[in-house]
Amino acid sequence: MPVHYIYLLIAVVTETIGTAAMQASDQFTRLWPSVVLVVAYGISFYFMSLTLKYMPVSIVYAIWSGLGIVLIAVIGWLAFKQSLDFAAIFGMGLIVAGVVVINLFSSSATH
Image (cartoon, rainbow, N blue to C red; front, side):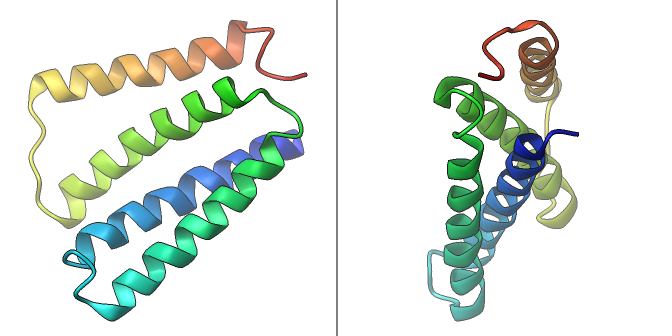
């Protein structure tokens, strides 16, 4: 796996951790989830910036946000007992399909 995809994967995972911590921070009223949020987003943006050396920002952001949406929806369902209806699941499936299409068929995915 090329190093820029590893950087992007780290960026996606840490962004998802940060977003989950945002929910847990209770609008920044709880210290440790708030600290995790800030640190996780800092790490995510750092690794996203490393990815930008290899891929255009439009592709990086599409993958980062798309995968982040799906991961945080799963975490919301598992950890925070938030429900997902068929339309939400179907829409997230389309997001995943879009990320797959970008990675398999786009010549813009790397430069």
